[in-house]
Picture 1 (cartoon, rainbow, N blue to C red):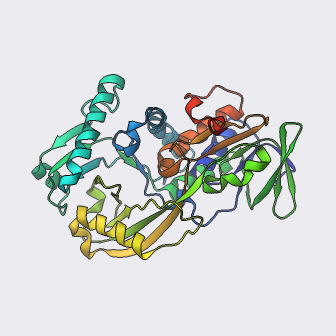
Picture 2: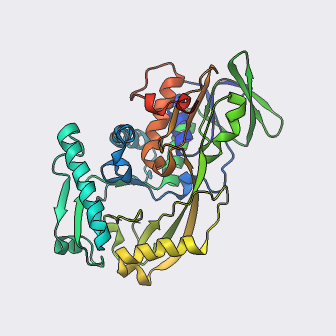
Picture 3: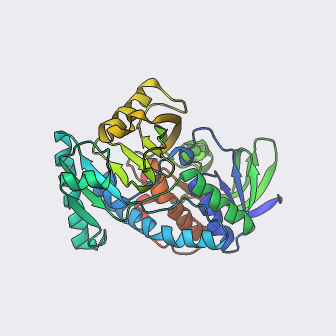
Amino acid sequence: MNDAYEAVVVGGGIVGASAAYHLVRDGVETLLVDRDDEGRATDAGAGIVSPATSSRTASGPWFGLAVDAFEYYPTLVARLEAAGERETSFSRPGLLAVAVDEDETAPLSNSLERIDERKRRLANPAPGSVESLEPPAASARLPGLAPVRRAFHYADAARIDGRRFADATRRAAEDAGLDVENGDVADLTVANGSVRAVELADGRTIGADRVVVTGGAWSPAFADRLDVEIPVEPQRGQIAHLRHPELPTGEWPIVKGFRGHYVVPWSDGRVAVGATRESGSGYASRTTAAGVREVLEEALRLIPALGDAELREVRVGLRPASPDGLPILGAVPGIEGAYLATGHGPTGLTLGPYSGKLIAELVRGEAPSSGLEPFAPERFA
């Protein structure tokens, strides 16, 4: 580790790993400082990457950013694979959206209407990628599914394992010259309106021309030093991982109901089911009986065949939730060389790799590939 860097990234989740990767890939001498907090959202997320079917599609700014992020994934995956990272976990199993109970039929219809409107206006999602299904056709897509009232299938929906993708991105960055410090940034040095250094908890000071705060739910720790509002709060999400070796989960699509829950299949009989959205939980990254019951009941409501599955693990992630549900991306007003990339809430795995790319472009003094005005930190001033 050097005594000074052109850029220091604070936080090693999927956003921080991506920011560091894109910086070093373009020749910026970069240090990533990561204390690997328990409860980091990246490590727990189920990894649905499907803007077209997200509950956030009613937000124009979010949808525009998410579409760009979705379209960037194949490019980034190809670059990581070319660097030797073959296990990114990215795949496109498609998504089956289902209304099992009557109260879900209206939300399903609303979702299809938004999809149709965006196809007409924005040509996204791609024509032919969304197909309405009769109940027998939905059951044929996934044997073991509960009887449904209505359903549709989105062919382009993707998934990632957040932990594996972030690790692959970080390894590729290290191979490109990234330095990594497993430690805690206790404070920042700011003088004459410019960031100058990061101060580690062990007493060391590392010079930095630019600092990118990608600390997820812990980002507000730097608000006072940077004299900026960072209104991010932890939102706890509990996700159960099940395994049933006799079920062909590797052939399943993602399954989405309309009560805020989902089932994400993987190979070898494994599925992730979730997730709770618990505000006011603070930084308590622990499982609860009520949370586990909630996700399991919803999983079994959608796919009764999972009733005999083994409960392997429950992951807990503290999502960095902002007041308006949009990420906080951009330069800190009034502090030269300071940048924020946080507040992605429950869509961090959709937006994270692309957000890292955008913030790296800003750090390098380039115009970002997507407009960041709706996500600027000063909107909370």
